Image 1: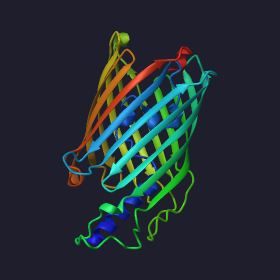
Image 2: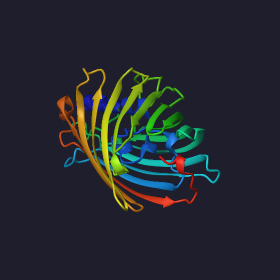
Image 3: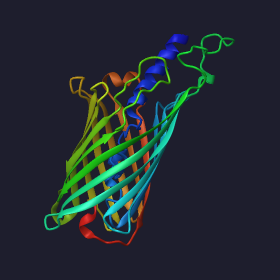
Image 4: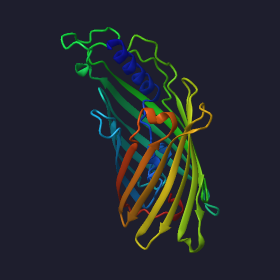
Length: 320
């Protein structure tokens, strides 16, 4: 039993060590793409955005995974640059990580006549990961976990960077990002850890405007590649918005699959949200299908709350 616990925790840390960035789940679809790319920092020249999100998995089980994130981004006074901050707290059984990132983006107008823009972004990221071995159970209450491969509540802190660019042409957008630029060896365990930590992200889509500009339809794709082992995932998304006098309401669906598993969907997530004046609320339920149900049969719930502040900087073509 003891060895099984050690192996499970080691595998958990190995997966986290490859990322040093929390899974976005469907947070980026909740009107907050800043969580996946620094290029969206201050993307809206007229509004500053505050978002608080909570993610809960395996409901009904003790010490089930849960995550909280807080993000804020705004345009600077020079009207061409934006900054943002993201903080997170993540707990999964006896493992916990906290961290954050500071982001800067510069927004360029390539052609104002046809609404062509380019944004460049960079983030500094910090992550602290800890395993609490005090609650480990070996099968014998009198036998502590003393394996040198685990140690007493090991922890590690990491610093890294993320770069990206965002190209927009009218209603089309394409974002490419590289995360965890600094490769390093993680030696919290004695087993071999990956040296290549870089991840690559692509987020692209197009917003179709309906008649009288009352409805908007937005298909999009999100692709993520792990350099360390070559794994990759793809999200296929669709959102529809109805514009109202005070904001909008929207609904959508997200489908995720692992590209090395015959392109079979591993999860489906219905989404919905409401923006009224300066307030925003969104909800998503990620339902696992196929083999993924063996690990999380109760699915994943995500709630996002937001507030938009007017910054009075104008600049109509710059808005997201």
